[in-house]
Length: 247
Image 1 (cartoon, rainbow, N blue to C red):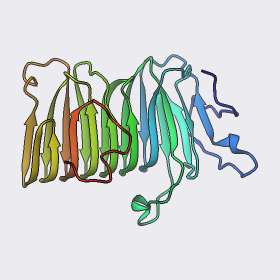
Image 2 (tube, one colour; image 1 turned 90 degrees about the horizontal axis):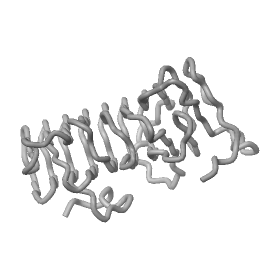
Image 3 (cartoon, rainbow, N blue to C red; image 1 turned 180 degrees about the vertical axis):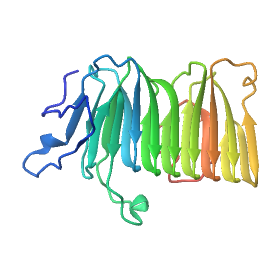
Image 4 (spheres, rainbow, N blue to C red; image 1 turned 45 degrees about the vertical axis):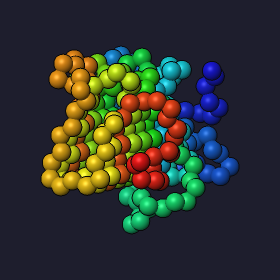
């Protein structure tokens, strides 16, 4: 697989402002950084993540590479293996906008372990991490229309959503144990073969093999969950669970 066309802006020091591409030069929307001495990485969205695809880049030789489309971030930079992406503040209602904007793509070097962190909320975010070594995944500020495909875990891996979850689908490999804790009530919740139409307060659900598992997922949702599914990865199709109720 060859590298995408265009010039990649790299920065292994302080985060740098991202330059908005002109209609005549779309190459400026590509970013990358060298792997250098990094033995682990952290992807951090500091002001929300909207219409983003995060992938394990099996052919990424550097630390990461990113390609942005309609909405350009104002900061893209790297320091000590931490990739920081900051978007401008989105207008009120932008999270629910159904316009067919093209998705931005961030590919992470699959040869090192990663933590993924989103602050100030996530909407229409797809994270296909099945080929990644994942240390943790956190979304602070709420999640709406979030799809996550998890890899096989090493140890107990934490997945946290703070601020509520709506239309969220999380898949894990078959045979991997998981625990789901929800604080704030839940409606239309599916955990493996269990379905909960409505429940208040706190929920604590576990797969049958969780207590004896060494490698597992500990999923925590604070602020309530609506239309959320946590199950084993089978025939998964992007977008399948986000615009309908869990069956």
